[in-house]
Length: 90
Image (cartoon, rainbow, N blue to C red; front, side, top):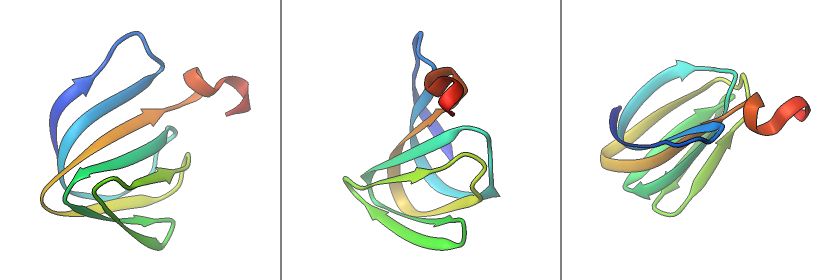
């Protein structure tokens, strides 16, 4: 995964435009959104396989195991947000 352009400011989330290749199985506290800008990405989310192409989005819940594998030249917007945005309802 190559971080290309961080989208930062005074917001309670982290957003990046990245060129994605692969990311091993992991989980984390934050909720994650992946929006495919270019190419194709295969995500395994809690044991289910989902394939995204340009213009498609996938949501990954908090502490949900997930991994990614992408074709060459795949670019995505990756947004992670957690309790700061969602407050006590999170």
